[in-house]
Length: 91
Image (cartoon, rainbow, N blue to C red; front, side):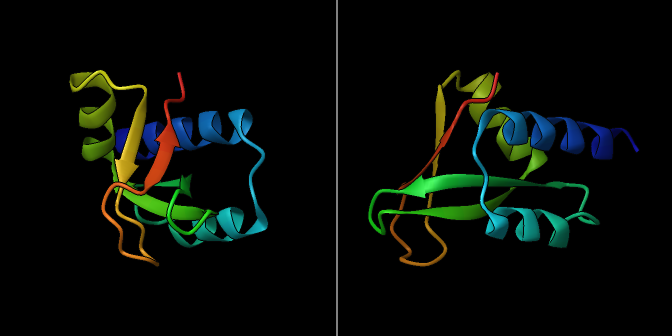
């Protein structure tokens, strides 16, 4: 239950800071039962489009808190380019 609360807290913070697309809302809805996955939306520099990504909660925490970066870069699920999707820090 605690993990689900943290997931919702992060997704709500993300939602309040960004102008999200309908595709993101549908993506987030599909992930609602996967407590360990956080639905995020980033910008792919290669595709030049917004893309949805699901990050494991611990991976998200590790990248932001332990590495102390102001953004996360991940592989695009569409074009497969490494570190092309940029997800900004929420807090």
